[in-house]
Image 1 (cartoon, each protein chain N blue to C red):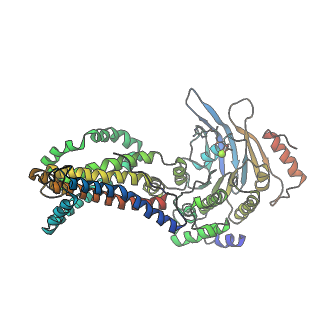
Image 2 (image 1 turned 135 degrees about the horizontal axis):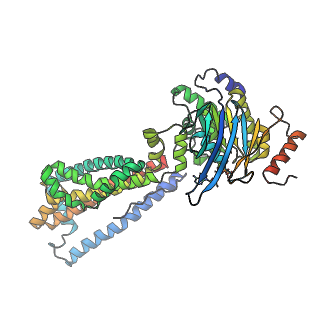
Image 3 (image 1 turned 180 degrees about the vertical axis):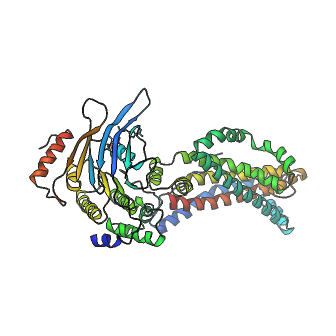
Length: 269
Length: 270
Ligand SMILES: Nc1ncnc2c1ncn2[C@@H]1O[C@H](COP(=O)(O)OP(=O)(O)OP(=O)(O)O)[C@@H](O)[C@H]1O
Ligand SMILES: [Mg+2]
């Protein structure tokens, strides 16, 4: 897992050239996917792989169109996105809260730090049997698993970043009568906004990972379920469809968060 | 400018009267027990309400440490600081500090930064007016909406001064507030400080290493430095400055005093 880099691009006064550069960057980024698509198409046309091993792009698109017509694709996409957003939001909120408490209070850190560290050390899929037994095979258990996945990146980045906030600024805040929650919201949180967003982007990536895990194991709909169901039916075209859709969804949500990050970094840093 | 200040004074009920500050046998050391370094030793001085006390001393002699003790940002390990007769314990809201570095919040505008200095009790509209007035006073009204990184170091320092003034404190603690200013702005800001002090009397502790600044602004000058055979700095001299302000920079009395101060600071006077 690689940390998404914090893009604090130098602000350009010249908006025209800035947006031109952005368009150019986006076009450059499309080159490799287009080449891959071309190679994929080429290999199926030349018969390097059989259509069962590697269905051509057209077949995958057709599989998508078919599911879409039957109204199933929308359901899968909707439910998966909903699970990720719910789990991510809850996990991020909890991670932010716990990170703030442990990052600010040495006592809380001494008291809870080792426990949270131990829980983090558990490979997250190890929770699945317990969640299924305790909560059951339903939405709650899936969202909870995603919550666990989203919690730790946010918690870790926030608690670490809070310990490294410029002491001089914090002292200035305290000298002017800021304490506790007001000090947190006026000085400490704004100071760690870039770190918070790095944590959030890691957490979002984790959320999609855990979504697929949850849906592979126990689900009756969603993209993960589509994967396992297609595996059982030998529908390689649908497997490709699910993979491509996961890539697109993951990339789109990350890009949206990236936009929010750029705005926030400009606003707060 | 004085009129602006004077007119605002009676309408500001939260204004604190100037307060007395007493350092009593104050001592402060840093480091572990095996590697202890005494910075301040046995500092005793009483500052009258409304007095302007300049604190002079060589770099690293403990001037900032002394101010921090008065602000309650640092706890001395011997002696105490009394403000208005009560001991300083923890951050003291009767004080306002302008730190040696501007220490502005980079994500706020200058205006919002100055507003942080406002006392808790101030109403939103009165606070806004006060901030605007202070920004104008320090010559930053045109930069109210700028971020600290968009202004020069000297401008940031002026904003930091305005933030401290916003508190209308009983004790104003200024740690080299004019250090980053060019000579001309420095003179202007010194005049401004005197005007503010005349319009809204407050006790001022002004750390500086500029002898002329101390001579211009202070009622008395406290020289910190090593004295006797003990370690660390203590009160080397406490000298009243003669004459009413603004003082004639070329007067003989002041020239003599300057020579004396420079000798105390270990600089050969020319
Ligand atoms: N928190 C601290 N921990 C350890 N040493 C400290 C601490 N604060 C100050 N000191 C030491 O105390 C001494 C005095 O520091 P101080 O900042 O008060 O000097 P100063 O007189 O303000 O100097 P300058 O004119 O350069 O600002 C220095 O030697 C410094 O290293
Ligand atoms: Mg200092």
